[in-house]
Amino acid sequence: MIEVEWWEFDDVKSLASQAADDIGFVIDSAVEARGDAIVALPTGETGAAIAAGLAKSKSDWSKVTVVPTDGDGQALAALAARGATLLALDGGDLADAQAPFDLVVLEARGEGSVAGIGSGPAFEPAIAGPRGRKAVKTPDGMTLTKAAFEGTRSLMIVGRGGDARAAVERAIEDGPLSRAPVGRVLADIEVDADILWSAE
Image 1 (cartoon, one colour):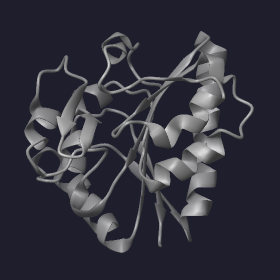
Image 2: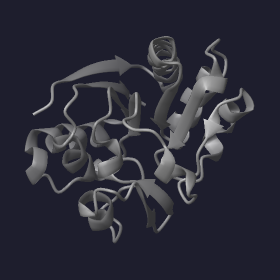
Image 3: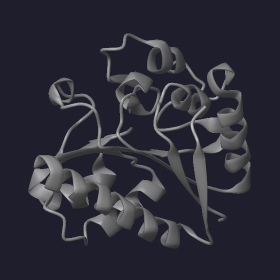
C-alpha cells in the first residue's frame, strides 16, 4: 500500500496556490535534470484554479508537455498560452508522449471517482483495459486510463469536501479490492502521494 500524506486547506484558493507551487517545483526540477518535463493535470474546477496559478510561474513552459487527465483540456489553456505543449486525449499525439510522467495530479470527486473515471460504462476499459491504451471515451468525454498513470515519478491528489474525502480514505484502505476508481488506480502506483484537500 502506498503511503499518503494529507495537507488540509480552508478553501480551494489556498489549495490551488500550494499545488501550483509544488507542481512548479517538480517541473523545474525535471527540466533542469533532463531538459524537459511532462505532467498530467486535472481539468475540473480545482484543476482550472491550479492551472491559473501555474501560468503565473517563471517555469520554461516551452520545455513542458501537459496532458489533461480528462476532458478536452480547455481548463489548461492558460499553460498552452505560456508555451507549453498541450496534448489532446483524442489525438494521436498522446500515443507518442514520453513516459513516465514526472507528475500526475488527480482530482478526486464524490464516491471515489478520479480523473474522468467513474463507476459507469467507462470503468472497466479505463481500469482494466489493455496496458498500451492511455485514454478511453467516457460518457462525459475522455479520460486517461490507469495504465497511463503507472510509472509516474510523483503523484498528487486534490479534492474537496468531507464526503469525497471519506470515499478516498476508504478506497485507499481497500486498495486493489476497492470498488472506487481512486482505490483501483492507486493500488498499482508505486510512489507515495501527497493529498491536498480543501474543506469547502
